[in-house]
Length: 164
Image (cartoon, rainbow, N blue to C red):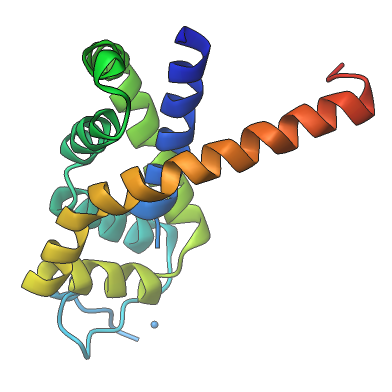
């Protein structure tokens, strides 16, 4: 049971990290939500846009909401245990570590144009509504992803003789 909860937690963290992630005189970064704004694609501008995105998408809330939605899809007798387990894993230290890695990865792998698009999307009421509903999407999709992942890992370990 604990191993399954840890696996669910790791899968959720991975998926949330993926979800969270989606040039002349450069305008200020605060102008990035303007459709015509084009920022020079520099590490500094990427980092600033990533910070702006994370201000719009409160990572801790997304994590806690997703855990609540996952718990609702578990058998009744497991829900309280999972909620307790999930919240105990969401320590400030863990959230800070995940946040740091997520921001670094987003800044390294996306251009300022792509990051600006995320900021514009999350600045729009429709984008905010869509993000609020991601917890439902995650809770619906995660069980199948876990099932497929567990099956694949079992087959891999069986065929490879285990991870060395």
